[in-house]
Length: 315
Image (cartoon, rainbow, N blue to C red):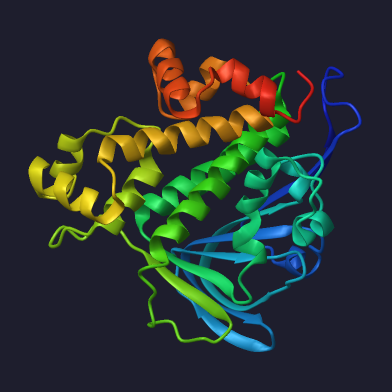
């Protein structure tokens, strides 16, 4: 079911939120989803899809990303399980639509321009994106889509549209960062001309791969992450993982993690009315004083001041 829902308690009056989730085995919606970006998570089974009059074999777990003009058909399937998320750009910012995010209008503020970059995965690639997933990444994406579905169907929280938006922001932010990481790891094993294929596989413990460490960090930044824990997960030692990570990224593991968490918190602050302590937890912090200290150190502002200067939402 598609949710075109006005806000509750007068908080979000006159703002209509366009977002949909689907799961199961009904494919009727796939050719009736214009004016929506499409994220399709194939979790298990197998399928043959038709896109641009060509057939492609899908081997889950994998992720496919389409723009508002694309339509696909699932023409064959075997024990297929999937989740689909459809959304309009105004879910991120009420000022966004397909025309102005494509035209790069100068009317956007600096922070709005930053948020528009989250749509690059839909807009800037002529080819469509296909990501082979490992189990951890699959579970993370599946949980976020499920959280979106539960929030928009239940509408139990006062600021449920903001909560929905934060889950969507997490999802898009995760895609953006993972693809940026994998752009240096292009795979030629998937040779269809219509798709860019990335392999975001689970950890291969036989070899230290900084890209896989980055993927782990971006998939688990909300949890406790330490250098020692990463060294244990990747079967190496603290000295080696720290040295090779800095050679690859130009920064330390902890600085990279802190910047990622603050970037996540900044995006949620700009685009929601969630309380500071809720945003802190979503960004992976559990101490408000420490969160505020690190936030100000990186951005130059307290979280409250940053929100006041950059949010598009009336506080």
